Every structure is written in C-alpha cells, then in structure tokens.
Image 1 (cartoon, rainbow, N blue to C red):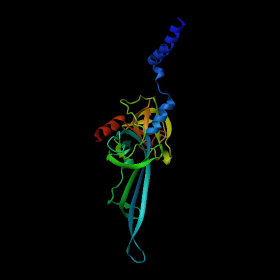
Image 2 (tube, helix red, strand yellow):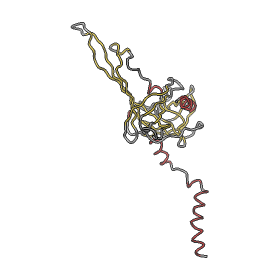
Image 3 (cartoon, one colour):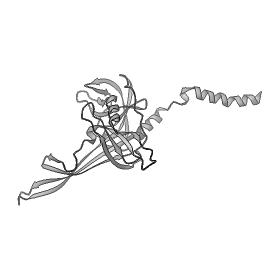
Length: 250
C-alpha cells in the first residue's frame, strides 16, 4: 500500500498541474518582460545640403545640414532564417517613418535643402542596431500606422489582439520617451474614444510615437500622440487600423 501511494502521488500532482489553469498562467512580470523584448527603438537620420548666397561674393555656398528623430515600434513577425538572415517586420506610427526621399528638395528655415541620404535604423532591447526599410505607409490620422522590415532579429514576436479592451481596462505602454534606452513601461486605463482614437490615461512624450499599447499581453493599438484637450491622456490608433496595415503588408 505504501508503494502504491508513492506511485500515485506524482501522478496526482501531474494531474493537478494539467487541470489547474493557474499552473500555466504567466505572471505579470513575465508578460512585461515579453512586452519589452518585443519593443524596439526607431531612429531616422537625414543628411542634406543647404544652398545659400555668400553675402560677400554673391556665389552659392553649399552647407551640410542634418536632422533626425526617434520613435518606438513593435515586432509583429519575422522570418525563420532558413534561407538567409533573420528579418523582422515592425509596426510603428506612420509619422515616425514619414521622411523625404534622397533627391527631394524641401524648404528649410534658411532656404531650400536637398536631401542627400536618409537612414532608418532599429535598435533592439539587447542593444543591436540594424537597418529598417519602410514597407507600407499610412496617413497621419486614425490610420497613422506603418510597417517596415528590419534586416535582423529584432526581438520577440508580439501577439496582436483580436478585440479592443473595454473602458476601464488596464493597459501598458512600452516605448522610448525622449529617446530613453532601453524601453520603459507606463500604465493607464482605457478612458474612452475621441474622434476615432482610443484614449488611455497614460502620458505620451516625444519618442513614444509608434510604441505598442498592451492589454493582457497582446497589442491592442499604437500610441501616436498626446491629447491637446486633456492632460495625461494619450491617443492610440485603433486595433482595426493595425490589423488593416498588417493585412496590406506583403
């Protein structure tokens, strides 16, 4: 009888582990780690040439100029690397990747600037940096979503939600406000809807744009800007816009 009890005990524990859903639930710490591992920093660097008149000679003078900004994004797909290097597809805000093309001439504060080069890069949570190529751009409204492809393994693939959280649900934002690295988290609650945007009670700062908004470990939207009307309220492009852009991406 004693031998039988010893034999049945591990089976009983195994059965409890199989049938108890809590045994397989991820802790909040695990979810946050995964969310951070899926978040990337995006940097856009632009080099150009400004032509101005020399006040003394009247001749044209070329002056090199540069500009740039940072944003956030999330890995939503990647290749297996069986036929070449691993590549990752990134979701971000359209206005993060919206940049002039080489050869374009734009009007700067001191005169026309010819764009010489544009470099977009992704920096992963592990500190690796690789080039990012835009795939599909959107527009800067409720469809302010773009996709790009990073030529590296940019991190864990995030799961995209199939439904929108309800008003009052807790959400987490991961990103790089003010360019801080590595990514940090902020939290808030779903506050409601405004002009087609999902509103959440979490702050938005430069560099947060394109950062994923999470609910129960799944991406439910991308943070794009703060609300002008309400302090400490941020606007999130709705989940459907994210799903549409993924569907449009080859």
